[in-house]
Image 1 (cartoon, rainbow, N blue to C red):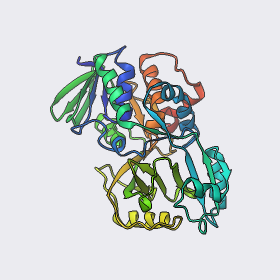
Image 2 (cartoon, helix red, strand yellow; image 1 turned 60 degrees about the vertical axis):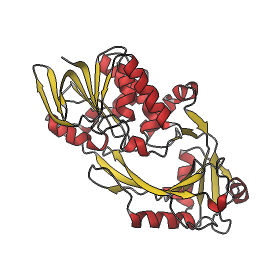
Image 3 (spheres, one colour; image 1 turned 90 degrees about the horizontal axis):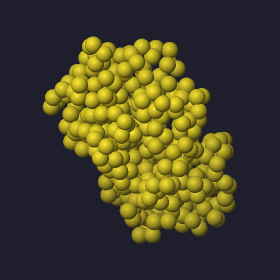
Length: 359
């Protein structure tokens, strides 16, 4: 046996779990790409806003707060603003309440973000309770912790076959085989394909593309202190990034698992929605990219052993909230795998369990 636990997937979900498990069990992590965090984890907007997402995701994100605020250098202040125009009233009210945003005047919003157009923006709300996440530092911190405790993190190790025999999993990869007692499926957009290889019934995950453009700071302004800005109904968002702005159309286009790229037309439509709310037009792009946000059918993470194959463990469906929920999500997964009492509520454990799908 090579490991007690074999983790398939080297994004933030798999790497954080490896760090949690390694002090107590032998761990081998398998990542298909040449580097960790190549896909969704490497293309995240990287914001910790714990009240964003489904109720279960919010509970996990809130449970992650102590870790984030006590770990030096991971978070830096950002803040979150939502703006809307005529016709956005219902979506604006619903989302502002869900994320505990406080109303502000349009003049106050424009003072904070001078590029906002007071003739277009009719409503605004804000919360300081949102922080940038240094995703690279977080990934590398978890990876160092895992390796220091004896975990083996293998890159360039795409899984090609899975076989369960005599209470052991044999995992065949592009560069050799690994055996282990438990397999953790943390393969992001590919989780259902991994399940099929293992002879486990897929749960119906769907990857959705989200495109991003990096544009110069409008009118050469200093954007470093601007908050992240959402259009009501999540029609677009913008976020400062190293002296420039990241703007996304915030689309959710269902697709197959692949190395995603931005759709030019979708990107143009999203940039137009952003431009409609500001005074400075977008004249050029510095770069663009896309990532896949993968959701379960009920849009809530899946964490737990498969209902029929108890040594096959799901850690999947982060849906773009993987970074902000990973401290509590990885701790819960480790507790369940190691047979320990979870730190989170029994109701949350049930809400996240794959058994909720009745398969």
